Length: 93
Image 1 (cartoon, one colour):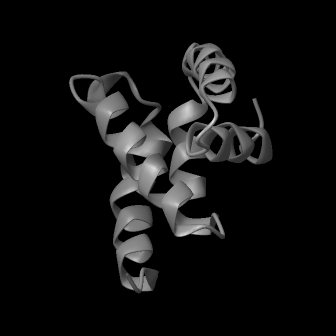
Image 2 (cartoon, rainbow, N blue to C red; image 1 turned 120 degrees about the vertical axis):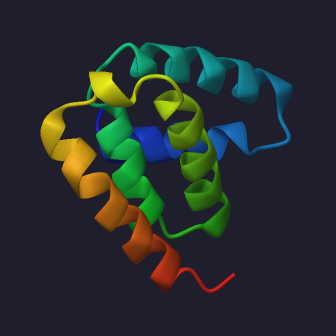
């Protein structure tokens, strides 16, 4: 699942519609089966236009990394601290 698609799924999770949330949750489970999803969440954390999507991406990334740090690809493990620091510097809220 590409980053724009993942951004749409996260946006749907923030909607008040229960059916949309259920569909988005199912799509998110499929996305988490892909090992590239943490990298896409990190990208959304830095580049998503809506602050709610950035916050949700941060929460999901944190939950995904708990206990799985060593399973990440080495390039992402080295880039992630820098990406997170840059995202925090840019965040105004």
